[in-house]
Image 1: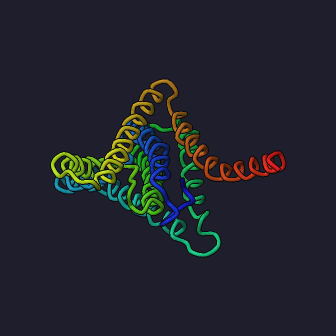
Image 2 (image 1 turned 90 degrees about the vertical axis):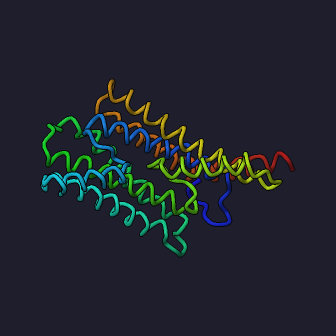
Length: 244
C-alpha cells in the first residue's frame, strides 16, 4: 500500500491507501475545526481568508493565515524529500513523513487541553496540523502516482463528474478503467466524509484526545505495510515442509 510505486503499484494498493489515509484526513480536519476553529486541510479556503484579511486591513490575522499556507507547503516539501528518495532505502522513504505526522497528532492530543484560544496558540496548534496534512497529501500523491489525494475533495468531485459523463454518454468497451476511477473517487469522498463525521463525534466526547485516533490509524497503515509481507513469507515457510 505504501511501499509500492510505479509499475509495481496496483489499483488495490490505491484503494487501501484511500480508505485509511482519507479517513485519517477527514478526522483531523473535523477535529481541528472543533478544537481550533480552523480547517486544517483546506488550503483553498485559507487563500480566500488571506485575501479577506488583507482587504479589510487585518494584517495580524493575515500573517497568521499566510503562515498556515507556508506550513502546508513546507509539509509537502519535507515529505517529498523522503518519498522521492532513490537508492536502497527508497521503498522505506514514506516512513519518516508518517512517523512525523503521528508525532504531531500525539503532541496535539496531549497538549491540546492547554489551548486558551489565543492567537499565538491558534497559530502553532493549527499550523502544526496543516504541516502534518501537507506531509500526508504530498506523500500519498507521490506514491500513488498523483491518483489519490487525501486532504481535499474539490478535485475529486470535479473528476467524478467528468468520469460519470464519460461512462454515461460515451459508451466504450474500455469503460472498465473509467468504472475503476469512479469507484476510487467515491471511496476517497466517502471515507473523507466518514472520517470527518467520526472525528467530530469523537471530539464531543473525547475532546483533544481525539487526535490519538488518526495517529492510531497511521500505526495500522505502517503495521500493514511493514509486517504483512513478512507474515506471508513466514506462513509460506511454515507450510512448505507440510506440502513437501
